[in-house]
Length: 355
Ligand SMILES: NC(=O)c1ccc[n+]([C@@H]2O[C@H](COP(=O)([O-])OP(=O)(O)OC[C@H]3O[C@@H](n4cnc5c(N)ncnc54)[C@H](OP(=O)(O)O)[C@@H]3O)[C@@H](O)[C@H]2O)c1
Image 1 (cartoon, rainbow, N blue to C red):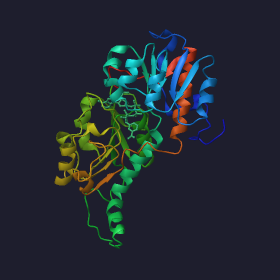
Image 2: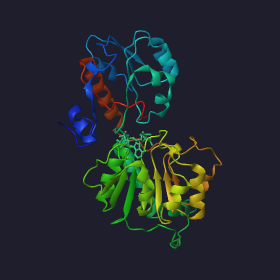
Image 3: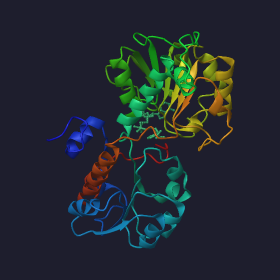
């Protein structure tokens, strides 16, 4: 296998192992509603991808689209839809069984009435953006603990100011400090791996089981969130947005965090009660926040988060990386191969659970 460990030239099996992509327990051919597909509608990211998809779907009509309007026109007779999920598309479908979305977050797709009732097979892009998201999470944490946000503000004013005081949490050395990862899935695990590499102790919660890698000291369940919060020097939100996680980072949670602790959020904005976060920052209940996701999005001009001290914001771009699109396409192509062959599918979403 050519290429670096994280490079684009890897085999599907290497990608599955490295990103810990989960195959379904049942093969596609044993799933209710599966039949050998005859027509697949696919949103492609580049023209060369059409031929690469066709290779793994011999005899299947592959309709390549670049917009939702084109997909809508192609829906009649389609067995699979890759790259879109909307009410209009599901309403226009007459033989659709499999939907592959290109994002990890599926809160809008699973909320559609047709999806709730439809018996569709839904797969997503869980774990695919994890390396980039983990690097952004660590970058936000590092910037805050080293006070880079404060120095950068001074740089913009061309001011050489060595004494910035001792803002809470700043210059905290990370060795032996505790990170709480909320949502130890694809992203959470990659964040945990890097934090452990920096000498941090990592604790976590996940939704349905206590499994975790060796480098995570403790894996709790959702009801333990408040017990774990006081231990954390850094909290990372990597949890999907579901009925259970909406608003879990609220006043009660921030009150339990140390005043020297930082909050990093890369999951979804609506897991956080924004007004409570702003209040916690203003009152000094927490030391600062690194936010890739906010509620609302886009964050409007004039919103207090823009100007609250010790806040670094990236505009929902943490997943961007120079290898992400290739990983996404490799996974989608492998899933199409598996679907056509009737094999177990990767990254199946539990529609009722919401992720
Ligand atoms: N900022 C961005 O650009 C960006 C990009 C990609 C994804 N995201 C967001 O990040 C989320 C996670 O992505 P992923 O690839 O890591 O997905 P994932 O692999 O499905 O991981 C989700 C994890 O969250 C856990 N979880 C679910 N409910 C929980 C709860 N109530 N409390 C604690 N943990 C809970 C799950 O636990 P179990 O496995 O035990 O059920 C699972 O470990 C996505 O859903 C998406 O919203 C953001």
